[in-house]
Length: 256
Ligand SMILES: Nc1ncnc2c1ncn2[C@@H]1O[C@H](COP(=O)(O)OP(=O)(O)O)[C@@H](O)[C@H]1O
Ligand SMILES: [Mg+2]
Image (cartoon, protein in one colour):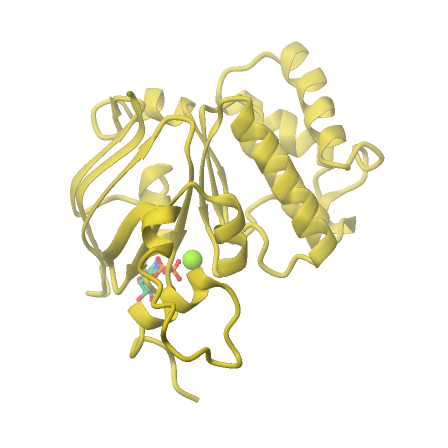
């Protein structure tokens, strides 16, 4: 089967000397719902920035639907949509313009982009907000705006970096439903999250990264099977995935 994303021995050391990725190898089958988990500072956003062409790698390779990011970056980028962790839109621009202007970067004519943007925004519950400026939106609405923008060129792979951070429970659930509908329509999803409950519910496949290294990578069933059912339950801990995660990254968590 064709891989949506094929990352081999990816390394990234920032100019400051921080080794953010220390040889990451990861592949995501087409049509998958993949969760990349890891504590703060693990390297998730760095990995996503490289895959979406926003940051340069130090070494290794990234292929998106078989297209090498280094050799054909423009072509590779056509296949990928991203919902960044940190918003990067112009808050004084109108909602509809933010989405339509993005289409311009992909060479999509305005006549095609406009109805498509309206439909995306309406599906995401922003149909009443097309002509307001982005700064007038709530945080959750801005997040949905970023999803619409990420989908305007109809990418085959959608990458979401902590999309539900700071989003209330109700909206989180409607976002899950939207993402599940997207995967059913054939879009591959890569999601980072620190809500392990969320990953457990949504993802078919999961990888855990800490300190720039992948320490677990498998199907949700395989990773949940690592759970030690005989261990005494910690009263603060919730789902199985969370317990597996905490056990694996033990020692990496900040102490108060
Ligand atoms: N632009 C940058 N310059 C220097 N160091 C960075 C930069 N971005 C991230 N880092 C460092 O790289 C490591 C990984 O960060 P990041 O990819 O943001 O992790 P995560 O998204 O998993 O929280 C951290 O040590 C972080 O401080
Ligand atoms: Mg991050």
